[in-house]
View 1: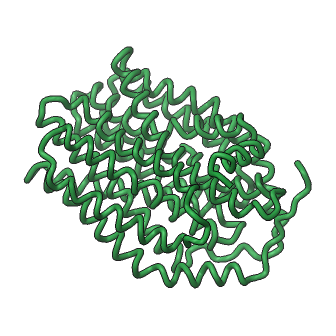
View 2: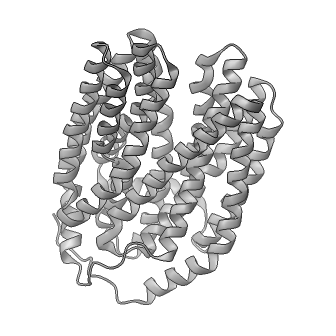
View 3: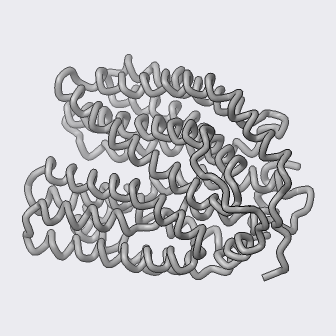
Length: 417
């Protein structure tokens, strides 16, 4: 069956509204970090204060999202995501009010951290819904779940292209505050819609139908996958920081967002194409291949000295990013007890955020001391670590998948909603 036919079958099961709502619901998180940086920097006159506030939001979200994911596993996504969407929207609005009122930047940073703590991770939670959505597909379900994870990887990458672009447009046309006002409105509407969508009820019923115990979340395999996601977060953070330094040195700092978006464009294309890979290509082997791809495709960054060359290198590097992440999330879904899937998905998202903070911090120090090439060295080093980790982890991931597949399955057969 062709990938296009698979995507059509998948979206027919979910309905086009769900796909649109789940995509728009994840945009505010993609908008919030850059929007916070511009807002706080503009109100305080300090990019240091803006960066600290944006970092506080990102780290708080990375810490809080696994807690919210575990709670969603326990009581259902509907109540948790609804509360997070409304509280996160209120937090963004409060941050705008503090900035426009000229509040001291520590107060703005604290508000940003609280907002990050409250905002939902729609992308990871959307992944959890696909198995219940495809529950009546019979023998086609495994293939459709794989296709769904390919789509989710591409959707996440697309959100981090569209989100910052919306921030830049709103900031340029109106004011930096307008970007976060838009993000708050989108979160209140589409985050709440995602929470209340009927698919949330399917997830809750799937959990209630499960017959096995809750199961252990942090197995050795999941820890390895968290490390893999921390590494890809380091790629994001270091590449964006080095790109910013290079664009600023060239006298066009405004191009930073557009240049970094090219990483996402290549990633979206590759993510959608993952559905074309044969099912006989195991995911632990895919992870090794795409990790090696990260390393090989990151190497040209050490040689770039012009912005056109950088644009090409970032676009090519993106071809390995989404396939790598899709492999990680798919493996996590396969080895995690169904009652803990929400927690697992959000833990991986949190690890990505922490990696971003590490990558941007280390690359920033190196960029200040030695320029963009040293900062891109962090990106390449992350590729080396990803390759080494995935080579070592492949046997354990293979064995864990076999163990889970051989265990008695939890009950997933549900009545129609």
